[in-house]
Amino acid sequence: MRLNSTMQIPFKAFNYKDNYSPFVFVSYAHKDRNEVYPIINQLHKRGIPIWYDEGIEPADEWLETIADALSHCRVFLVFISNNSIKRNNVKREVHQAMKRYDKDEVKIVPVYLEDTVLPKGLSIVLDPIQAFLNCDIEDLIERLQNIQNPDISRKRLIEKAEEYMKQQKWNKAENTWKEIGNLTSELMLSENSDEIEKKIALCKEKRTLNQRKGKRKKHTRYLKGKDIKPLDDPGEYLVTLHVVNKGEVVIENFVLIDRIPDNFEYFIISDAPDIIDIQGVDTLKWTIPSIPPESRCEIQYILKGEGNISDEQESY
Image 1 (cartoon, rainbow, N blue to C red):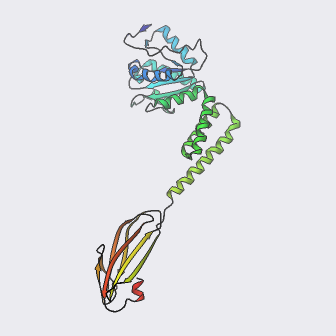
Image 2: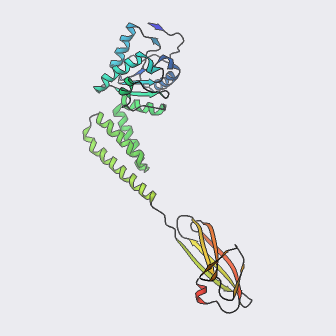
Image 3: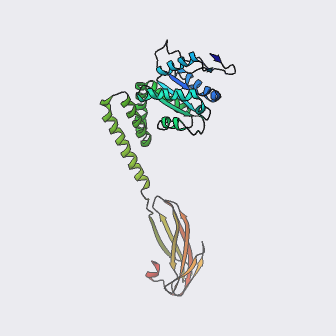
């Protein structure tokens, strides 16, 4: 066996022959050790048993050691890169792992270190398997712990799902219950499957109901009115137009109009209106840019003229 002297191994590989705990076999290209070693070191520090070749170059006796470790692992963790897809030892390890995977003896977890186009031989094998495209270490640790200790992980996931339901995070709860269902199936706990399906259905129903509520249109509601108050001088009146937003949304570009009575002139106090013609009568028009919910907006002006203002004109 030949050790690459430039490598700094982060820890000693797990000794599965003296410890029957399930462990993770790591397949990688030595050229990627600067990316791979920090990741597996974090897994090791979090208590996940890791077996890897410690940077030793392949030799006949070492290939037998690798084959033995590969035949005993619970998880096959393969790091995909443009380096690793060219390495024959990585390709051999993947195909050997697939033989056990097809018998449901091992779980395969691919991790992409970079954008990589798989050659056809590897693509057929790895494409159907869920992979980590951007290695979030916490997600990877959780995935490996779920595989290593499925019963403990199942209890932890149930607690998480129930907490999501209390918080009414129905989408996260639904996805977590689905994950629990898959884990329950792997543990062959068929007596719990019906209850899990009910939980998934409930979350889906709640999520759909929330989506419908979110899409429900909020209607605008408002009250508008007009007050006319005589002033001290004969023939002078203070006109107040008002509108109150009684709805839940902002009213935008709200239009108020008022007709000028016969034999009267108007004098602006607040905002200047546009003058429009409605059925041959000069009419004042104001456009209010926005009225927030529960807000009141007023427009005031003065009328001066002769005669009385009719009831029809007062209510216009």
